[in-house]
Amino acid sequence: MNNTELKGRLMLKVVGILYIVFASFSILAGLVAIAGGAALGITGGGESLALGLGALAMILGFVAILSSVFSLVVGILGVKWCNRPDKAGTLFVLGIILIVLAALSLLSSFGGDSSSSVVSGLIGLVLPVLYTLGAWQNKQSLQ
Image (cartoon, rainbow, N blue to C red; front, side):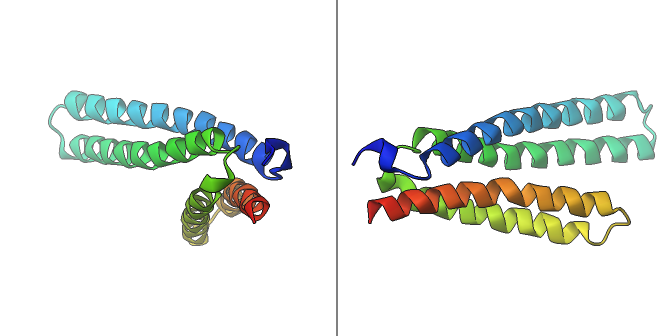
C-alpha cells in the first residue's frame, strides 16, 4: 500500500510531534519541581511546613515526569508508525487511553472555581481525539 493512501498519516505525524514537544517541556517542568522541592526542603531550616511543601513539590514533579514520559512515548510512536497501517491498531488503543486520561483530567477540573481549568481541560481533549482519529483513518486504510 502506498503511504499517500493513509489518510491519517499526516494527522498522526503532526499530533505526534506536538506530543513530543509538550512532553519534553513537561518533563523539564517536573525536573524543576523536584529540584525546587528539594531546595525548599533543604533551605526551610527544618520547619515542617517547608519540608512538607518541598516533599509535595517533589512528588508532583515525579508524577508529572511519569505521565509526560507516557506522552513522549505515544508521540514518538505516532511519528514513527504514521506510515505503518499494521501498527494503526496499537496507535488507536494508545489514543483511546489518552482520551480517557484527558477526560479524567477534565472531570477533575469541574470541582474548581475557575472556568479556565474547564476550558484548558476541553482543549486537552483535542490532541488525543485527533491522534485517535488519525490512527482510526490509518486502520480503515488497511481494510
